[in-house]
Image (cartoon, rainbow, N blue to C red; front, side, top):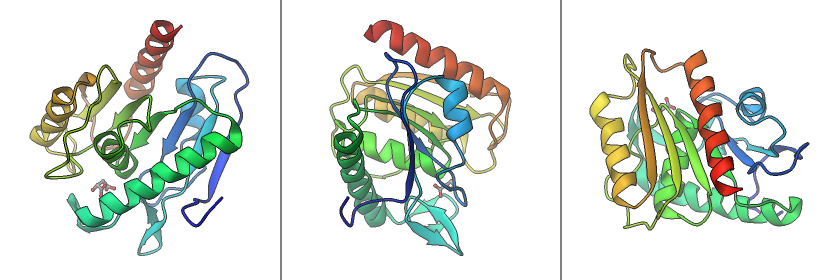
Length: 208
Ligand code: MLT
């Protein structure tokens, strides 16, 4: 792969019919973090799990931020472009269909940026504790793309109004958005896994 490549893990599918998952970790995570979650959400699906290329005090992320929840939007755009190039290359290398992103926190934010900036790259997305990644994104055509947004009612990082704005923005772009607010904080809960698993089974059934 080229210089846009990412350190990553790839696990091939062990059963046919499920879309590959693009696993995008949170700040300080790596390519190993979400493999277990991916297997719980969609057993048998191929898993493509890159490590974010930005370091914040040694902690990998997918784009630079100026402060918690305050993003370097030029970097968001640049990194979303790099990640989209990686997905295109990895699809060729591993023979994959368009993936559904499963992103947590910073990983969910870059997944949301990918949807808005490169709408053809993802088949859909599960956004866990996501925020609006760009104040002024281009008009994307996400016609019918399925998106599950799971927010935490007591999330100290993502204000309720912010995730509502993200849901509205994606809906306005034509995505088929399911937004659920869970009795949780920023961390994931069992309800996230259960809802994500049910949602993806539904997406697969509709695609079959
Ligand atoms: C971000 O920087 O993407 C958000 O603040 C979430 C996080 O803490 O990574």
